Image (cartoon, rainbow, N blue to C red; front, side):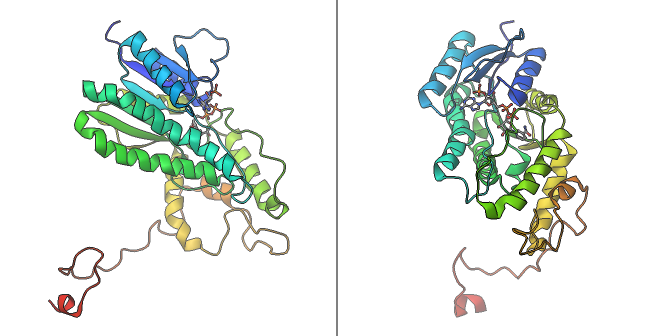
Length: 313
Ligand SMILES: NC(=O)c1ccc[n+]([C@@H]2O[C@H](COP(=O)([O-])OP(=O)(O)OC[C@H]3O[C@@H](n4cnc5c(N)ncnc54)[C@H](OP(=O)(O)O)[C@@H]3O)[C@@H](O)[C@H]2O)c1
């Protein structure tokens, strides 16, 4: 029992975090689940720790609690997060900052809090639940998508920084998963966006209706936590792979909108396509433009304009 690996999962009171905490416990990990509220009812092997990832003091208290109780943290699963939906123009900056405070700075805070122990022991896994929207942004989910793009960049950098200490960093990029994450969209908004906003929200509601449960993400996390050399980016479904391809095809469709025209006075030349595009296995055109012909290398410093002399040499 004493050598069971110790995992701390943030946002473990619901959805993906709750499923992940349970599956890690079933796989033999000693698991602590951090959230502002405890998971409802059901008996579980997961110990609840009060945690608000927006608050430095709460994060420090949570990590200290686990270290006192279990002696170490082998696996951190950064999962706590929520969706702030609406047109970029509709969302007050205060709400955008709040989105980043949880989804991005929450991840940064938790990661910094567990790293000293992991560096000392020269071992550890930091696994972060990103999203398909951290690879290709969804209209009307702008600040949420931006927070996940930010998390992708943070973890990509961190992976290089902590590899010398034997610490493993991995991202999990789920597509739509059926959880309480999909809150009803805001009612009040700018009328000009009503049509496309409604179509995108109808499309995402449809994706959610058909989405798998959080267990598929939990399985991926458990397999990463048990792997000493996981990939940086880990997909959980075909949908995520399709979206990566979709992103590669987007620059070719500059004049099209992913959600149709903005108002009835500018009718859509292409009908609403978001769902269709997410469903399609392959884009009709190659995902990337053909490689540009390489120019012969010149002996000129990076960012320096070639002088006539250097160009001639
Ligand atoms: N569902 C999807 O389709 C989907 C797809 C891709 C990625 N994701 C990502 O998966 C993660 C989990 O989402 P979910 O779908 O499982 O949603 P969920 O069921 O709403 O769960 C969110 C969890 O985060 C916790 N949380 C929120 N704010 C927190 C804070 N300030 N401090 C601590 N915990 C906090 C919540 O607990 P308390 O409210 O009790 O604190 C809850 O346990 C999120 O990062 C989300 O972006 C979800």
